[in-house]
Image (cartoon, rainbow, N blue to C red; front, side, top):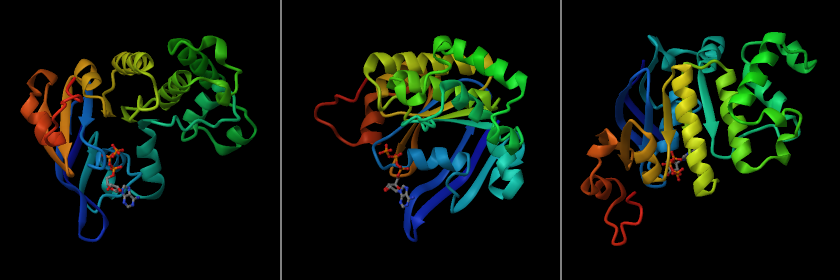
Length: 252
Ligand SMILES: Nc1ncnc2c1ncn2[C@@H]1O[C@H](COP(=O)(O)OP(=O)(O)OP(=O)(O)O)[C@@H](O)[C@H]1O
């Protein structure tokens, strides 16, 4: 479904942030990408939807090479990839329901956005999704009056409004308390399964990755050093990914 071939990224000449990353992702399931800070996880996720342009290598989604696309063709391909952000990226002064409708931005003509004249079917879908993420009573509330967990629920619903074939999440729980983090991971896993799409999540918390992922990709210094199911991720892999740690407190 999604295939990364020999991806390399250098923001500065001679300094590789991603080195020869090749991964194939299936059409279902939760893949967690783990690794220490600065190891290139966000860069990898952003190379998938081309928010970051790889220095070399290929990204294929559903038979299309995204790395070759430009302009309107790239925008159309990006619509098929939903993204959930650590800091939610909501439009703070807009209502919750309008934030969801922003997920249709790539699909409806701009005049409809400017005049806030969305198709009835989009509005109905937005209300349906709001109910699904447990915020049915919050439609008219401004985004800046929500808690972090509620914001992330809106972020997830907005991403699903795009009708994506793939969901990416960049540290979606880093700003949340442990209980809310579990709720958000549960929601992402379940909603992706309901939509029949895969989800790829960058995550610092190894315990959450183990609990929710069907597959874990471990990165170190821009390279993939582990790729397998959670029960195959052993302490020596974690040592390779994170380096030696006396406390081992990150081992979930
Ligand atoms: N736009 C940029 N320009 C230059 N360097 C960048 C840019 N974005 C990221 N980097 C560098 O690339 C490296 C990898 O960053 P990246 O954000 O991908 O890592 P990460 O594993 O997601 O880290 P974290 O877990 O802390 O978010 C870092 O050294 C970072 O400083």
